[in-house]
Amino acid sequence: MENIFPLIIVALAVTALLLLIMKWNLNTFISLIVVAFLTALALGMSLGEIVDTVKSGLGGTLGDIALIFVFGAMLGKLVADAGGAQRIALTLINAFGKKRIQWAVVIASFIIGVALFFEVGLVLLIPIVYQIAKEIKLPLLYLGLPMTAALSVTHGFLPPHPGPTVIAEQYGANIGVVLLIGIVIAVPTVILAGPLFTKVAQKLVPDAFSRIGNIGSLGNTKTFKEEETPGFGISALTALSPVILMAVTTIVQLFQEIGGIADNLFFEIVRTIGDPTTALLLSLLFAIYTMGIARKIPMKTLMSSAEESVRGISIILLVTAGGGALKQVLIDGGVGDAVANIFSGTSMSPIFLAWLIAAILRVALGSATVAALTTAGMVIPLVEGSDVNLALMVLATGAGSLIASHVNDTGFWIFKEYFNLSMKETFATWTLLETIISVSGLVFTLLFSLFI
Image 1 (cartoon, rainbow, N blue to C red):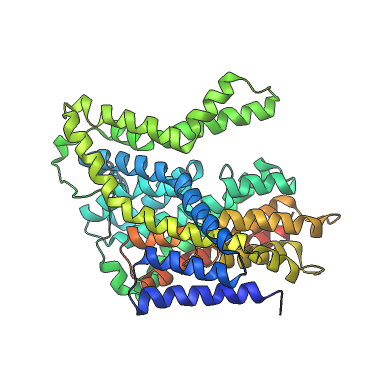
Image 2 (cartoon, helix red, strand yellow):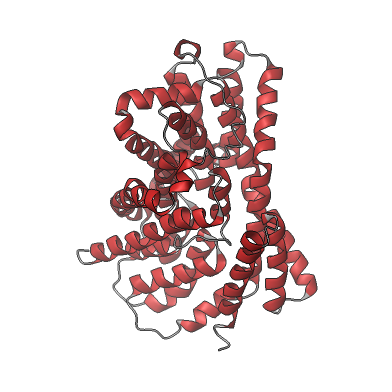
């Protein structure tokens, strides 16, 4: 009973949070902070620890995403206000046609998702997907689900994302092999969780597909005549500039590792430029020129657009930070240790065990990255001496860490706020989508294990 007590507390915390938000209509951010404090008390944390943990969770989450969100929102707003997003949307529509537009979004999201963190890809793609939906009069969520499916799969399965990269190192797996097998597994998983699941979701929660979305990073979007928009090339280059900077950095680092080249000032500069925050800042400055100065738009107008985008995402940042506070309480309160105790001495298949532990930690702790890293630390002693394929262990862990995103995961709140959904609709779309990705990832990984 002692082992599962922390997990019971997690279940009660989630129930309390749902009641506060859905039944008593308390503000989401306030609800998250209240539940974080109550959960910490129930887990036996001291009063001094509770305040420090909540502040650490808030600050750590904002530290990770605040600048990314702000710069990304500004970049998206400038591209949208200049007509760049509309030009990209029209070009994709003309190239793929309305019937296949979902596939255009999936392909673009997958390419961007390989290079960018989930949050960065989201703030870059939202303006373009919004514009496409507007142009051909489709529900935003019809394109939003395939987009987030592609971004989530790449985030959970593929290096150079933090989770798969670090756990590959911890397991001692070859990152190149993880990437190659990961792509093979990721493609059918994205198809299942994206275009195919969207058809199911439309029947489950039809009202969700009537929402226009809370696209705070866009504000009031403008419509242009085609001749008034910038060219497709410069629009795409501006929107994809963070992807390009990060991809170049990844390639340079790969050559450094392959060649065994010692670290020096050049590689340090490259790493700095490829950091998501720096890449987005440089891309924003580039957008100010290409979407503004080069088109003779006054700086005052450009900065007005930038300020409007920041005001729009403020509530998203607050809610996300609140989710980070609750996540930190669960981590510091020993929930991960409780899960480790439950599985000590098991004889389960290593691949399934890695997935299962990561899944339980994901549901309990919220963060996919934290769940993956914690799982690796717990599973490594259990697989020593076995002949299990380490690349498949990495992928199984990554798949498990994505399951059933709910109220203690910042991604849940980001998705809910951007697409302007109710709690029920978010569970029926985002939570179910993440679960499909997780289970599909496990199934395909187990199939692979039969042959390698």
